[in-house]
Length: 344
Image (tube, rainbow, N blue to C red; front, top):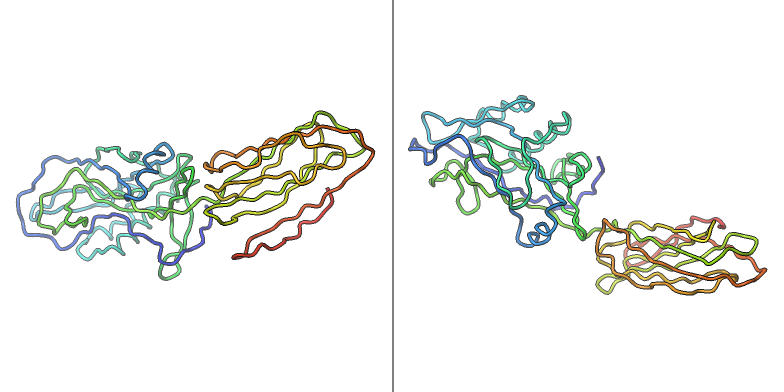
């Protein structure tokens, strides 16, 4: 698990079923013991998540079994399987509010991770899953694995660590809270509550909310090729690297590459995705002349390294060269030199 730096005021509430006081007895509006669950995203995120649905999985875990209450138009819930330790939480749902549901979802998510549980079903946006009526934990995660998608964040109150899951598309990183949803449901103005005086709905669409941020984990790869080796030392080449986004320099550094053969590469991580990256060969030693290179490219996919290819040719010389590697980090609007030192 990785550590996620907290961001005040970020913890968006996931769509959950809020169960209030039980309504008076009335005929159940639906028959059968199963419902369907479909997933949707906030309007501003929908296009990106839909276009990258293959990068997202939504794990659904049955936390409690639902049964119709014979005396009221309601459902009772009994914690099931590995979630039996949550039984007391389901014995009386009359005072459950959004905060308590989020806390209960956290407890259920911890049980999943501690026990390595496998989802009962896995879906994505646009899918309709057929599920037995009950209470379900919903965990969106990346297409690698649930364990690799988990981060820990500081909660908005009490300083408690919270379980979060992340999903990355080429440009963005999405962070989700674990969420609970009950099937079937009653929804009025976007709030599901068993005391709402509307018909029961067995075809539920769950809105998954998230925080979205630009990815900063892009990578570039600088490839160097020379026609031949010459001189008494390994050839050294120095590159100035700058990334610009929305009119601002978001990355600036100098890197050196020392060849042991006629070709070699260096990889530079943590480049902001969505930026235009310019790589300039500023030094090729006295024994090599510059032939070609691609100076500026757009980094539009954080999962695919952006490659720059440079070619030089040897010119006979007895001169020698060395290089020093410097590292710069941005602090606010200023770039500060961080010594790494050493001749290469």
